Image (cartoon, rainbow, N blue to C red):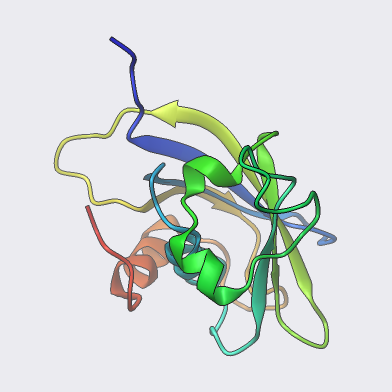
Length: 154
């Protein structure tokens, strides 16, 4: 029997920031990219008002070319488990005109903890949005995440 993981640990890194800004989150590996967009917005402290796009490295079914961005309709139906093919990372771009690039890295599969709520931020560093006066606080990030509209807690 083949083991199918339920949760995956993702590292979300806001590129070109000093000091580094990153978050480590646990989400279902079967989350749709539209749901991941809402998770990223919550854990990174974005307001959700700017445009966004996911840029993939490719696709096992050749539905996208390497470096192609998904439109909102396709993103709603694209599962995280197929978004990482052929590598272990993808790019999330947010905002305009100053687009912020995030590298989303699949780190490992994890076991859930009974009575924990998911998705869940488990670690991080750096104020986000950059320039914010509030330093990273995992409890505050998780409260924001669990209050965010459209995120299904498991």
